[in-house]
Length: 143
Image (cartoon, rainbow, N blue to C red; front, side, top):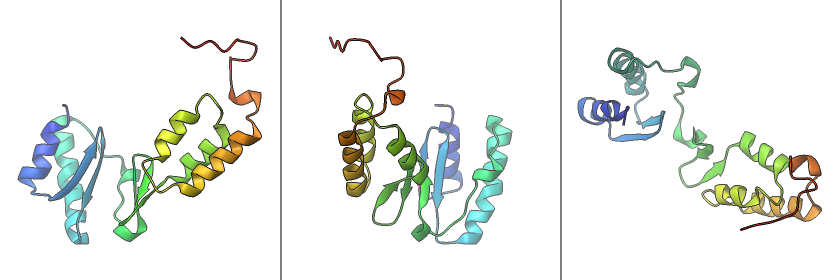
């Protein structure tokens, strides 16, 4: 609700056609680089003056769509999306029988056939006890 005022500003005052926001992450798409560069100062000024927020200077990126947009843990490309590399590496390192449902749920939203096979192979090898913290020696009881 807090950023609704920002949404209204972007859509109605700036008339941005391609704007996406989830919580405090947002993306603006345009085929005009100069327009995007102007929008940085306009959005930063609005956020600071109206909502007392600041854009993180290291998280403002202007790039071509074909290079992909890193958004919400995925890299979104024109015709598909993949899991962010850092997330993929962490997942392969930490997968076990307890968290597998969560990981498989995450990857079902992107192009991940190869990753799914790799995760299943890791599970078949068995997970080391260090990945199942605090549960060693406890009975498996589910209600």
